[in-house]
Image (cartoon, rainbow, N blue to C red; front, top):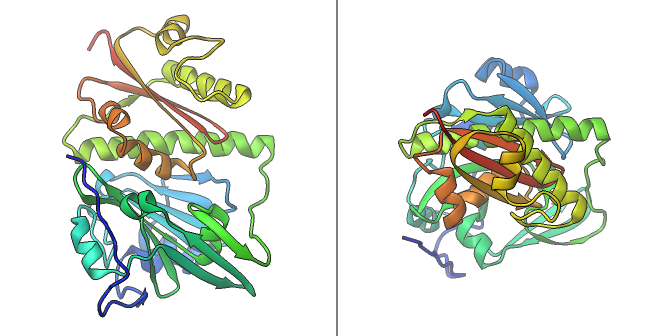
Length: 316
């Protein structure tokens, strides 16, 4: 059942800015790379991003899945998805009513940074699906699963990282902080990392819903990449390519053998975590993500266009 949660300016005794947590993974924000490695150990992979930091990927245990953003040897953001992670003062799976009771949820986030003024303006959809709170000097984006009414994941960010990502409407005075434009080689690395992250985050969510994890299928991933690239180059956001046809046409042309198939597409999301959480809150996309019959997945990312192609292998 879909659920919607309203907010009010009457927040009683709740303060607009709560204190920084005394425990949990958010305390990594501002720590050095050495501190990170001492606390979590070496990552399983390091992915490039659009925003100047690198994702240190911790994926050995899906119940503790996390991505930690490091820039200039300092932690600037953390994406926490695993159910066994300490994301105090929140908890993965926490009912959203509890969050709205205990936290000040405002429609505007005001930031003064390096002499500049920034105001993020959250619309009703933002407030219901990805509200933001401030804990000391840490900004926290909460991804809500509207179908279960619970907290799906949490993203902790520094002010500078939040401004560079611009996940909400932004009004500012002064200088806008922007990340450097990637080179073609850097785009290749960013896209490859995002593909793996989407694959892994999908499997974390499937396991959370007691479903079998999907296996990676390279041929299907090539089809997905081709569709993302086609959409980007033709500025055409659709499951039906004017050049290459439907998903069935594209899979058949690549000689992918399957019994059933499905496709999720998206464009202009911040990054892999944001796009998967977006799919999770859309009924049709969610049905593909959590389809018990699919066995394999291929992901293709081209710049800010994203495609997931799911298949059920014929022999399974």
